[in-house]
Image 1: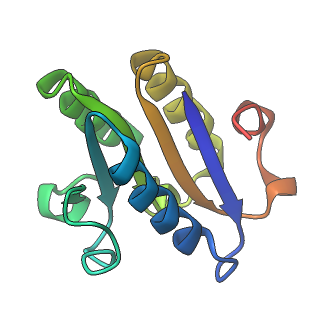
Image 2: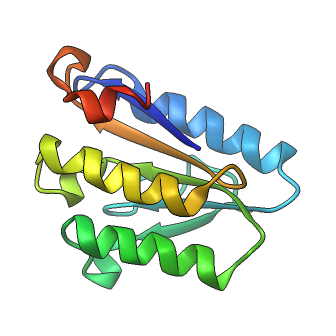
Length: 134
């Protein structure tokens, strides 16, 4: 299952995600994984959540991001929640590529893993293949 948190820069997307992450850590019976570009959330999220810096693994582009997330899921069947902050930074701000990446992630996540993604864009500018996840 894919959930999007959409808004322009400074609209509170990351703060909303932090609250969701900390709630997931409290209620989840499995692992909570947070993926971001840079380590900005280190002190904001509960230490029980696994925080991964995409820069550390040189992840760039949709194919690499999908492969990385698929590898996370394949290596740990206990993952219940994956949070991705700032996905458009990884996709080089290609909103059209976003729909393809979300479709791929939805296919591997199924109903067992909740994937929550922040998208820094105006909701009206999103393509139809992205809006279906709102």
